Image (tube, rainbow, N blue to C red; front, top):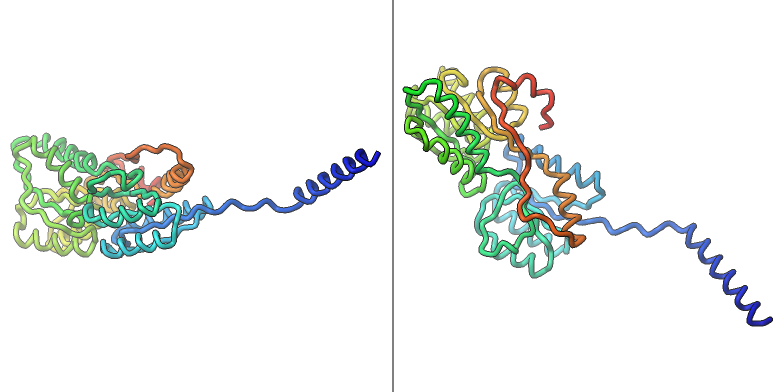
Length: 323
């Protein structure tokens, strides 16, 4: 009888504890913490990229520690070391330039913090220093710009076209790769010649300044402008107009990114084509970060899907643009 009574009492106590436990709120899972170092805010594209990452983090309940490098590699190195000291779960960054990352990435690996590259790649001796790279194929973007020009040049096969090139930030992955892809394609036509090539640092102001110098040196010899991003192209368009020429007519303008400003320029007849490079990487980054922390396998390279938009489709496509 005594044993039976104890058993009943124990069962009742367990039931009471279960009831109390059910009424208590469940402990919330620890939020994922990501340290993200952004290149800066040099263009419409970069601003849209930052917004995408911040909004995706907020939507997913991710704690985002954000650092603006103001286009300086030393600022990014400091930010990454700060993230390591704060013991974040994942470090992500869009590198200002390709080289010079081995030391700080080894520090992150030693701290067992996975690193995800976004938008731009790095050139390191050991690729295990980062988990994956999410972004565009910059070489292919350059090729697409070149292919569009080849098709246009085919309409006047006897004409020699003199090209000036506004490169992106010296040493950056998009500048290196967009130049490489473009040259690869136009090299198949001896009548397409790059007569001037200089960095415009991906900014509108610098694009205008360098285009002014090109026009002063070459004047009406210039037939085509190839800009590594839309902001430089828009700055250059202003310089072309101030020189008394018609952008899009007197000088064919080709650029990369696909921001709204480029579509507005195409609708106005001042820009001929933009090759898309999507900045909306936020949702992908959040998902990849969660997968990495969970120990799930992820591809070493994740390429975004993008298109080419000539001026002829700009008005129709413009309402669909998100950046």
